[in-house]
Image (cartoon, rainbow, N blue to C red; front, side):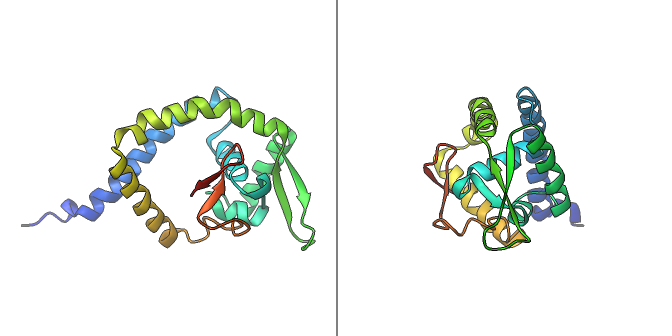
Length: 172
């Protein structure tokens, strides 16, 4: 008799969740050394990778794991810490932008080297270049199907490119 739990679909999702949990635990400890939670790092990185280091609050919510009210709370906290600021949207009075401040970019630049080292050690370095390319392509397809708004607000730039922390273009 076939065991339904041996289904490769369950294995694939299980491995994805296990990898995410393991990476998240490692990243959380490193981020806390720099005074950032995982959510704050996600927000500031999304903003830094967006045109003008900014996104409309609704687009930021669509790109993250947060609701619109959750984004408001995180941005409020990060604004109090001087890492972000809000800017009114010139074309829509109902919208505002979250923008990374110079202090926010400095914190991100201090955090990023260790974070990149951990990504290399525990994630990308585990794969040869061909496997990494295949994984990235597959993850993009899954992301686009499961979370189609994940790139909301980034249509100001070439859809295949997002700015790097240094302002250089990088493929999504």
